[in-house]
Length: 144
Image 1 (tube, rainbow, N blue to C red):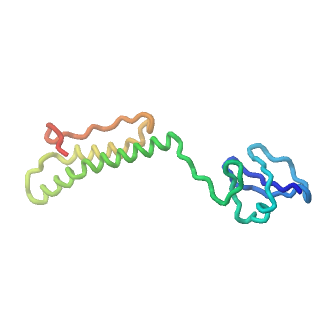
Image 2: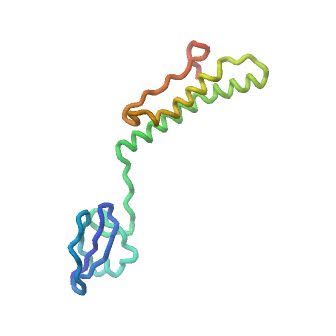
Image 3: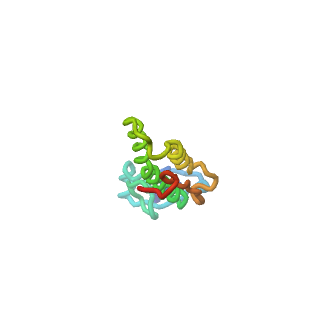
C-alpha cells in the first residue's frame, strides 16, 4: 500500500493520496511528496505540516529575514531615541504651563521626533540609515 502526502514549499500538506486505490496526476513544480505510515494515515486530521521531512501538527515558525531583523532593530532604536527626547518636550510644556521661560525651544525637539519617525521612509532603510542628530540644549551640550 502506498500512501503519501503532497506538500508545498512552506510545509503545508496539500493532499493525502492513496496511490493503490486512486490515480493522481504527477506533482506540480514547487511541491514535494513523502510517503506516510499507516499510523500517520490514520491521523490525517491532525497532521497538517511537513517539517524537516516529517509530518507534524506543529506549523513552521516564520523566520525573519536579515532585512526584517535590521528593520526591527532600527525601529527599536528609533523608539528609544524618541523616548530619550520626550522628557525635554514635557519639560518645555510644563515650563510654559507654569509661566516660566522655556529652557529651550519646542520646535527643534518636535522636528527631531518627526525626523526619527521618518527614518523608515529613507531610501536605504533598513540597510543604510541617516540617523537625525538630537538637538542640543540651548545650543550647548545635551543633558539626558
